[in-house]
Length: 239
Image (cartoon, rainbow, N blue to C red; front, side, top):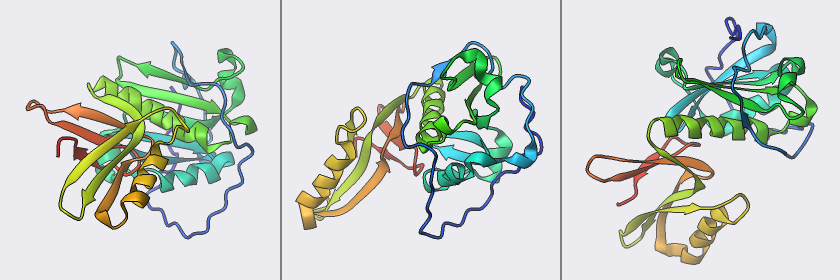
């Protein structure tokens, strides 16, 4: 496995807008492929060139290690995922993701080596993407993290979803939790925003639970719980 000892963990973040990031590319292609072997095996890293953002992704914790080559993209994680607490870090991650490893270490996986592996025996998901400009886009960081989240929650018996999820409270006191599921760019978030605009003063609160990925679980009494990834919130769907 990779030697990660000595890589500093980010423990505090201060965001002082505006923040301008100029990545080398602005699109993502291909897919994240599961491989049979551990892509981090025998990987040697220089700790002085890496940082770890311990991200809370819904009910999971993902240790995201990023190369300083992509420090702008790695820092942007703070705008999406909460930092794990000291207790969560001590308990260990559900997944480990290395963003920006030496390209030659992943060459065996072919021309698009954006890969992950599930270590069933160790109960850990691992993933890696090479340090190449063609992967210098936030989508390769965010979407792999969410892929690892989806696998982890399925292993816990939950159902992941790709959608926009919001808690809507009307001025009358009536309330509902709304989950809109669909493919990318089909108008999920826009539908919620349109609801806000059309309802006007009729809505007293529209709280976003998830704007991309999340998961659903059920209690023994049949209550369905919905979780987000970005803000770590959850609601009962039958409220």
